[in-house]
Length: 225
Image 1 (cartoon, one colour):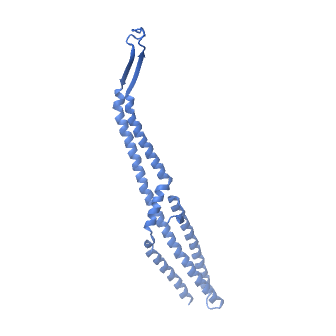
Image 2: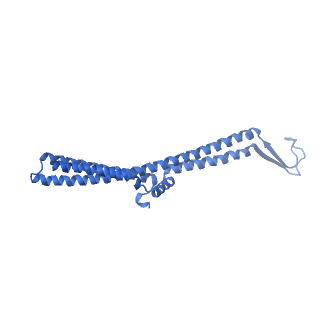
Image 3: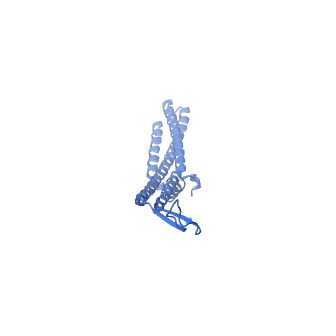
C-alpha cells in the first residue's frame, strides 16, 4: 500500500510536468508582449544612447556642408573721398569703398569628401541603432518567455510539494498506527523536503526572471496592462 502511494506521487509529478509543457505556448499574451517591447524601446537607456549618437552624427553632416563657405573669404577697404588720391604705403588703394572676395580651391575640392564621410558616419549610427532595436526586441521576448517558463515551473513544483506533503502526512499517520515502515516514511519525508527545496528555487528563478524583464522595460510588470 505504501509503495502504491509513493508511485502515485511520482505519477502525479509526471502528469503535471507534461501538462505544463503542453500549455506553455497558450500562456503567451502577444498583445502584452508588444507593450513590453515598446516600453523597452522607449525606456531602455542604451536605446537613448544610440539615438543621441545618431543625432550627433546628423549634426556633423550639417557642419561638413558648412565647410563650403570656408572656401570663400570676403574683405573690404574704405578710404574717405577727401583723402589723398594715392597712398604711399599702398599705391593700389583708391578712395571710396573697395570689396574683395578670395576663393580657396583646395577647400572646395576637399569639402565633398568630408560631407560624404559625415553622411556615412550618420548612416552607420542609424544602422547601429536599428540593429540594437532588433537585439533588444529579441531580448525582451526571450526574457518574457523565460518568465512564463519559470512561472509554469513554479506551478508544477508547488503542486508537487503539496502532493508530496499530503503523501508524507498520510504515511506519518500510517506509521504512527504501525501500518507503514520507518523506511517508507523516511523516504516520503525526504521527497517532501526535496520538493519544498525545488519549490523555493523555482520561486527564486521566477523573481529573477521578473526582475530581468522589468529592467528591460523600465516598468513594474504589475503596472503594464
